[in-house]
Length: 172
Image (cartoon, rainbow, N blue to C red; front, side):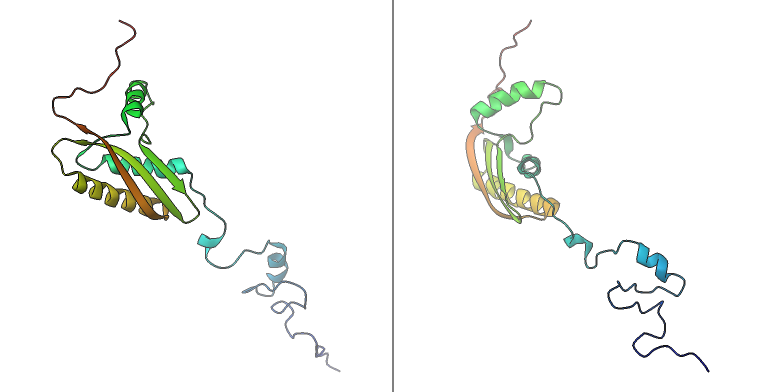
């Protein structure tokens, strides 16, 4: 008598595992046992496996750098922040690109507040528009977050004959 496989079992147990065991796709007869021992890998798009969080400071740095790249922006921050910034800039590694930038970052959106000083003679409206466009493009490209608003406060105008604010040196 010839042996035949029972009707309730698959004819090739190596490619069709019994009920209750994970099915391994593409495993030949010799690979079924080895494949069953390996951890099962998740399916789908790797981009959706896990979460990415972006700190407020990261967005602030990106926005600060983008705003400083615009012609007509003399400095970032208000009077007091700039005064402290001049001191901080003299310390090696102390330059703060986030001066004058405040970000509120959510899971998929961000809002930014910028305080700038413009050069005398430039159109404030044009500079503000260019800053807004540059900041939005840089933040959205680098973070994938949607920038819902960029509020710009112009706190001062740098006159051509004004010297940079610098505190008196303490040591001579």
